[in-house]
Image 1 (cartoon, rainbow, N blue to C red):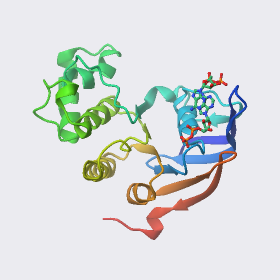
Image 2 (cartoon, rainbow, N blue to C red):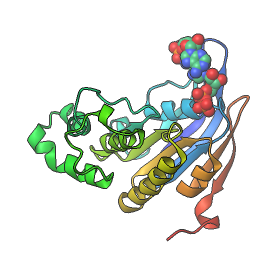
Image 3 (spheres, rainbow, N blue to C red):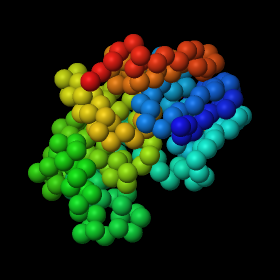
Length: 223
Ligand code: ADP
Ligand code: ADP
């Protein structure tokens, strides 16, 4: 069923820029949706509105199942924003810690997530000892450790080299196929949107509107 719906959502900033205009969009549970479009078409703004980080100027967001659903959202940015002095374990523990879960109580969930992102054995490393791809894996583990129903990703792999990016795409797809959380993934890569998602929301610039929605699973079956 539907997880959330944007209804006639618009966003204009105080500098006069209209980032989004009359966006109508339903995201279903278990979807892997890509927002695809050129730079400046409003992808990040739409994601930030879904995350509750930005308030829309017009329109509404409906969470049909229950209220307060924003608490169950994980966010992955292009810059992993890890605590630089804290270990991999402590970085992934953080969201649980903020909910009052102790280190020892959190340990099984942290270990499981680190295994999921192929970082078992790196618990004690600090971010600067890791490659960019590994830091991104830590960031994904941190976003998923609380088991959010919705994972929001804003061009997460754009700063990584092509090979690392390809590996992360594969691993993210595998993770999603196994766990079936809902994903909204912002990208300007056609390859990424087709490879990863089952729905592509193509956005057009000036002003930010949904140009077309494409169902990928029908055209591109995967095993
Ligand atoms: P508002 O109060 O309209 O929601 P913000 O407080 O989010 O706007 O942003 C205030 C100012 O930040 C803008 O007027 C702009 O000068 C600047 N700004 C922040 N991010 C951007 C961006 N991506 N593009 C252009 N300007 C930006
Ligand atoms: P995208 O993610 O597709 O690159 P954004 O959602 O970041 O697009 O931005 C859409 C438009 O809104 C751009 O023209 C951008 O400069 C502008 N913008 C984004 N954030 C702000 C802000 N805080 N203040 C003013 N303008 C902004």
